[in-house]
Image (cartoon, rainbow, N blue to C red; front, top):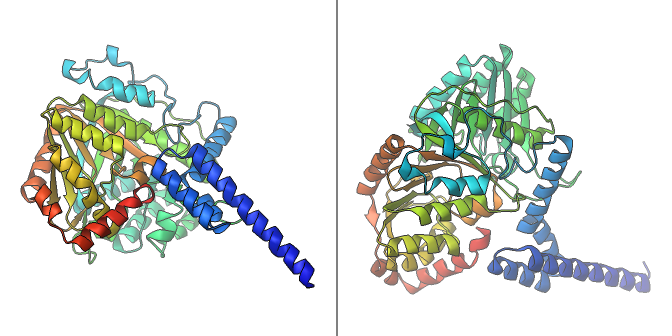
Length: 488
């Protein structure tokens, strides 16, 4: 190639790189909600022309939001009534037992908190539900497998991670048997977490041969382009006819003692009652995204199974709001006695941290339990940098000994509980597709409080002095990880 042509080509490529970088800079300035995140992307795009723009398109929240919004628009166009329901508020419902709070026999002390979730989700409470916690794989997996083995109409499983191993193969066998006896069996596995990051062997891929309908949720690909690796479906749901399971538990050996080198504690929740049909509808909405098949949403069941008032909370990029984040802040602000939290990853936004500090400063008992040994060390270190301000405001923070605990739990006063898939970090509250349940029930809250108390008794309380006395290199390391909080 002549030198003149080579110079022209280099100049053209350089111009394209700079134009792409300025596009990324302008997009980040206009669309980022977090100033530190915006600044980070602006600096990356400015000092790494071209490369920074490509990184922004792949990893940037703005890209995830625009892609998710496009998915929702397409879903709404093909199936009126779906709207933005697959990612956030406005889930359509059809009568049944999910009626306005004013017409429910809602105890008076519940009523000051109930409108927060209704305003953010557009959904009323659902009465007549029963929920039971299932601790770790030893309790949860046998009951889940039995529900699959006895299902007669449908089995819908959605999970973030579906690992190979004894547990994964056992679930595959149960799903295959259900499909062979004529049950409508469908499986959704996240296209990034379950297919790339956390598992390289995929026993579930063989299920299609046995009649199971399998879909991966937005896997990265070049043609047609889908490069938004931050679009991850973190929801965990299993619906077997009139029973459902949800929580934070994946399908993996590490949830069962003795089946893996590293044990991970977690809680899955057995659900029955009207909330089951709501979870089924959430699955079908995700199925519409993952498989491209739009199915009619089932009517809500009117079978009353218990005394819990429940509301499903869906959240994710593209919904135009931070439903879960705002609901957490609202629930904490409504607290009158106590706020108690268990979470594996604790990187609260400034607003969420402010709500916790305000609750403690009002004289409420605010307690947070975190794992002393985390599977993501950089998150663990970043959390240390955030703790002094919380501790000085009166928030009590405890670290529980190994094994690693993956439980997500919010308890407010003696009647409100929030469970589900969402962690208290930026990825869950701003990036992932998540599913939580609000539960108004004194008996259920009492049961979860007893579990919280048992873990608390074995945990170590943190003090401001213990953090101030950390070696300088550890404090620098923690602060360095904290800088990247918007991306962790």
